[in-house]
Length: 240
Image (cartoon, rainbow, N blue to C red; front, side, top):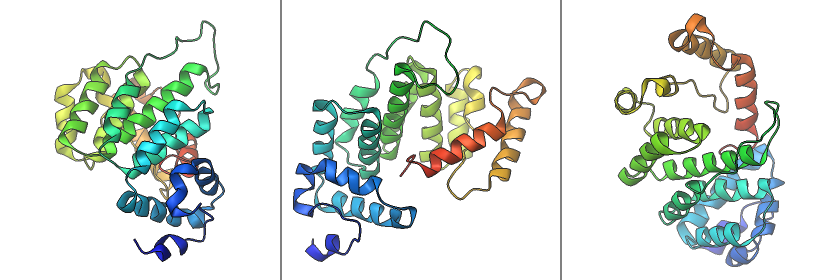
């Protein structure tokens, strides 16, 4: 790699040769980047992917050996997924099957993040990382997750990840309809919000989806709330 390839980036990343020793500084540069600088973040990840694949192992060690707060754990998993290194599969599969904390023994609001819900969010990010690798082995692992994982959220995210990485094809949907019990069929072709999508269009698709799958068109989530929630995720960290 020509040194200028990294140095041309205007985001103040640590020197390329030392990023494995300066992970916190690397994270800080990403977290302080603007939306206009986001393409440079992807460019930095492409450079790392091509010229320093061992960085993924540094991130894995950082995740396992450090007592990280939730937000930083999430960012590590996000970066590992974006780097798409084959050796991350073993890490993701080992971590995603670890036992979850018990459900709270009290009533919690839908907006409260409990210890279990935080861990489920992280497990879903691991599911995304598995799917990004797009091999026969990872698709098989996604099928195992959607059938056997203890978390409902993880099972439905495995379905979503399988479909996304299959290009949302009718063939993939048909396969999952045959594979899964009827209770999970609504999640095979559930509308997905993405950055740049018109929220009105998403709401319209969600209403049609509910009419197809739920009695009287009443699903578990108000589509306007779902659109707002997914728009925030698209803007703040889901897929960088």
